[in-house]
Length: 105
Image 1 (cartoon, one colour):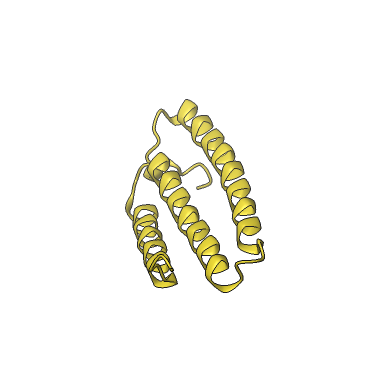
Image 2 (cartoon, helix red, strand yellow):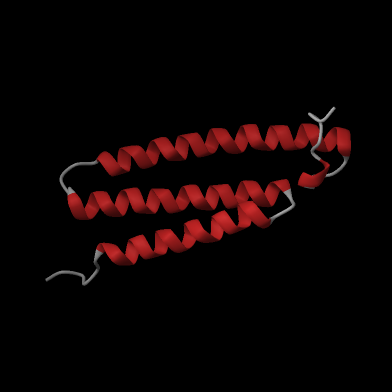
């Protein structure tokens, strides 16, 4: 007997998480909140990859392998992003994205 789950539940959850993350990345002024929103979007992608793999090709692990790569890239992105934010905070004493105008002439 099946569990009654179909891919549309997981795709719906993934789409909702991605939409929340995209809204947060666009609307937030705090650099840390933007990084958290990007991580939420990457988690939504991972849910989508694993769910599609489970329902389309359950004998292969392609979706899980891609999810591991996404997790690896997300970890590198967090490390690099936080390092940049900390370096800018030491100079500007703010993590507000409006204050990040270092490249302006």
